[in-house]
Every structure is written in C-alpha cells, then in structure tokens.
Amino acid sequence: MIQLALDTHDLEFAKKVAFYAAESGFDIIEVGTPMIKRYGAGVVTDIKRLISGRAKVLADLKILDASSLEIESAVLNGAEIVTVMGLAYDETLREALENARSYNIEIWVDLMYIDDPYERSRRLIDLGFDTVILHIGVDVQKRRRVSADILEKEVEKISSEGLRVAVAGGLDPYKALKVVERGASIIIMGGWIIRSDKWQERIAEAFNVLKRGSKWR
Image (tube, rainbow, N blue to C red; front, side, top):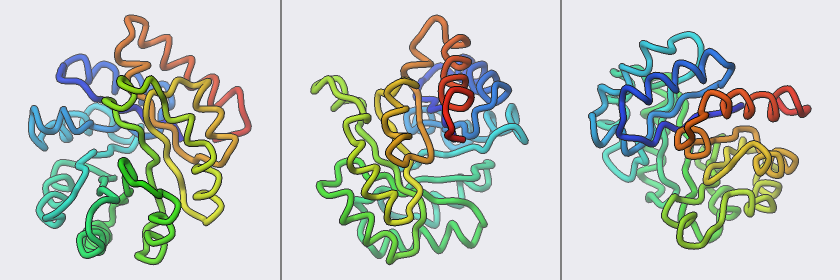
C-alpha cells in the first residue's frame, strides 16, 4: 500500500494533493501531526469528505497518553487509522489498542526513537498489535542526511515475525523499493511529493514505480 503524508500547514494545498492522490490510486491519506495541531481534529473531517470511499484516512496522533480521548476525537472526525508511539508505556499501548478495537478502527505503532525496534516489535506482538511504522523523523533526516531506506535490515527482521511494516522518512519510490524487497507492506511518502512543484507528476511516478513496476501491491 502507498500512503501520502500531509505534513503541511497549507490546508487548501493539502486538500488538492489528497484528492489527487486518492484519485490516482493511493491507499491511505495521512493527516499529519502538524496539520492536526494547527487546525484541530476537525481537519480530519475536511480530508475525509474529499476522499471518502477512495482511500482510508489516517490521523497521525502519535499518542503517548490519554488514548481514549484522542482516539474518540479522531473517530468522531472520520479517522479509520490512528497512531500510537512505541515509546509509550505498555499500559498506554494496551489502553490504546482496546479503544481502537472498540471503535473498529486500525491502530499502528510508530517506532521512531526506539533504540531496538526489533525487540520492541516482539513485545508489541505479545500486546496484540499487527502493524508498526519504522520511521526516521524529519529533523534526523535533515541533520544526518539519511532516509528510511537504511532500515532495510530492520524491515526484514520485523516483517519475518508476522507484523505488517510501514516505512516512513525521506523516501522516494526508488528508495522505497529497497524496503519493499525486504518485506515492507506500506510505503509512506510526504516531502518528496508535497514539497515539489510537480507534485501531480510525482504522485503518478510513485504509483507507477511501486504498483505497476513491481510485484508489490
């Protein structure tokens, strides 16, 4: 699956890109953390109305506590997937999973800043999770000049345990192929698309490379 991350403060631009990506075959549209903090959870509703039925909507909440309140707000605004941080205590993770299940939505665990993502993933299996995000944050990308394709070994190890693995952080479709070959199920792209003047062409290119140009779906 391909996911577009809308990490921008420009709501009107985000709407245009979200609609185009959903129409072009992207599977998931992510309402990014900066957008939610800028506009509130209601921005999830704005995106959902545009793309309903074409792609799923993910609210990147990055939950660390008080999951019942955060998940309720996301669900009331149309989110079908939410995120919780792997750094959270197990009690919060359990609570978040129970809350997500009660609303019949998906919940993914973001492993950003986890020192040993493989061992944390094994614990997440015990807790009942089925999807993790291997994620290199924007600041680390800039300072260290790295992107998430360097996590290909971790992708292979974690996916071999039966978890779905999403990968995010500085990816273009060609870097993404490296982690797809190691078992990634979900590719998350943001900046490569939304920071380009030719974002329409890049959406088409990503779809063609990842879905038409490989065996991965």
